[in-house]
Image 1 (tube, rainbow, N blue to C red):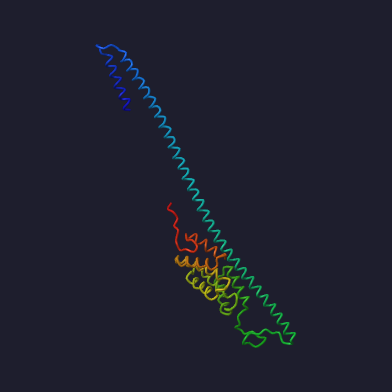
Image 2 (spheres, one colour; image 1 turned 135 degrees about the horizontal axis):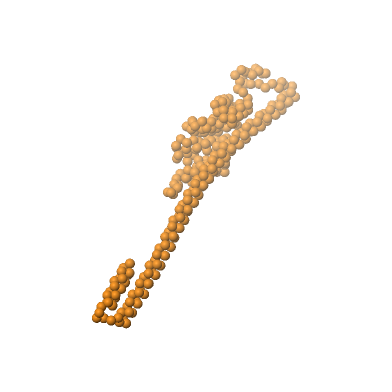
Length: 292
């Protein structure tokens, strides 16, 4: 713009000079006018080029803005998909955990039935031996007259346990809790006593009574440490502590489970829960996600 103004004033000066009576149109004046005209044309071309470049730059800026907006939309969509996939994965993990628990329950029920069949075979064998020895094959109850059953006798352990487990799997928690309690009352030293104690704690967990569940899971760990429900009891105890807001204690319990039963299914579940908490297995350090 400043160059154009200068050229304009120079042109005016030349015109005034050519209009003077004392001076003729000289060769130098014509050359100067020619140069000024050439400069004006160059300025016009430069202005046109600048305008074209500015237009191109505006288009590039608009295209870049559109690309950025599309990229942001794609990133947001990807984040939403990832969040949905994580939520679905967590749901599937919880569902798998429930299926694994049901499988454990079925195995326990099968073991109970096998134990019952084995006992019946032993009784039949003993009865055959008694008959061969000329002895009556009557089953007796301690403190009772042979051939009679006292009125307050406990139901058979297999029947009591199987009924309790059936009611537990059917969601009849109050009835199952009573039956498992009776099992522990009459048969606290049997192989399935630790399982009965675990299910009592698990019923409390499912009913949201996490404080009582922690205490009963502890009974499984302390009274039946070699039972097949020890790992499950420690896992669910860790979950219950987390539900109570006792995060550090829950993390310690899950890490202890991983250390004690590293190859168990429960250890895999504990590692997954620790990962979702942002804690590496074997550590209590929280890894906070980067700021969005």
